[in-house]
Amino acid sequence: SLKGKTAVVTGSNSGIGLGVAEELARAGADVVLNSYTDSEDDHALAERIGKEHGVTARYIQADLSKGAEARALIKQAGRCDILVNNAGIQHVASIEDFPVEKWDAIIAIMLSSAFHTTAEALPIMREAGWGRIVNIASAHGLRASPYKGAYVAAKHGVVGFTKVTALETAKEPITANAVCPGYVLTPLVESQIPDTMEKYGMDRETALNDVILTRQPSREFATTEQLGGTVAFLCSDAAAQITGTTISVDGGWTAM
Ligand code: NAD
Image (tube, rainbow, N blue to C red):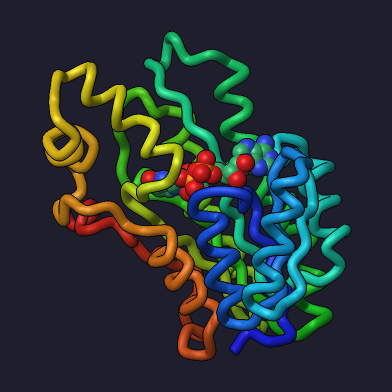
């Protein structure tokens, strides 16, 4: 059980981050939810998770494209036994057409924010004598695709930074690992299905099989619950000697 531990999950008002926060709360952890918005829905979500799982759940707004806000998130959380760096965005364009501000935002939100939160969290974990850092990378942290230059660079960077974090904490009861999902059916991906169907004149099943899931040999999406379960496993005692590595949840993508 993760009772008594506090988990900070970045980018957790939707998708994988929300799934991870739910599973950690189910395992008994107090959770801090985060995104860049600060709406009633955001706070209601934390309240719902807290009530449902009998844990303390808070929502803390922070725009992780800004290093100072990433650091403030951890400071404001106060405790941080489990840090899950999950917030992310995507932009698809060729290198020569890639908008500079999109490049900067992707590197800041997905790579630099993990540096800032980790730098703030490590002293807190050392003080507590226990810590788990889980960075949500991607199959694109291990493989490339055209037109996703910033995303692939940031995710490969996250995998590398995870290894350095593991080496710097190797002699301590702290681990750092990266989870590498293939396609997960989140609102972000769901919203791409109608466009793909229209663009190729395909029904939903064909669009999924022949376009969206073409690199995922299982031809099935991973679920946010499965991602949450993987993170919960990495936080368990069974995973105490797992550090500095990646766990793929990708239906066989990286076997190819
Ligand atoms: P999502 O859009 O549902 O969730 C992204 C989260 O990040 C949201 O909560 C969003 O509010 C937050 N976020 C975005 N910009 C932010 C900012 N500036 N500051 C704070 N929070 C911010 O997408 P998702 O699919 O759940 O993605 C979550 C992570 O998983 C991302 O890092 C993504 O790259 C990774 N991932 C997703 C898939 C997939 O198929 N969905 C596959 C591999 C990896």
